[in-house]
Length: 140
Length: 86
Image (cartoon, rainbow over all chains, first blue to last red):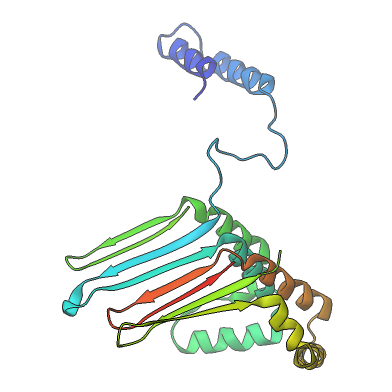
């Protein structure tokens, strides 16, 4: 939250201004803020480039390890390639999925939705901890 | 940039490592006649399944371009395999 917005909210909390005035002031502050250039990162930190899957398994007395690094760009390319699957194939896949009790309609899945999904993977962190196994999925 | 070098490391049960460095471009050049056949077969498949051949080519190209940086490492104590694309 920037300083001006905080001041407006404090004035509202203290009863110095009404809610309408606060809304107008916040609108004015937002209008005055510079528009970020297209393509600029939403957050100040650099955007992650890789999806990492790391698993350490010490069960059964042996030390197993899985370390996978997949470029996010590769996921995007895969998603675009998957969008070429013809509709009649998707209908057959839907029918098979339905038979196995997974009622997902793949025809409703648009490339844009999958793109958005990959785009938001950079905020993903999954940690699984067991006494002898640790698994971590994250982006870096 | 398409992948330039694929490194495959394989640890055998006796603990010795087998390392393979595969330079992608020379291998593609050597296999280009087969690659041509594969492209033709792909085009025929695209016609059969009514998929845009240009879209499919573009998709495969994007996939290739995005491969550098990928790394897969699996180690189960006795055996280990590492595949790295640069």
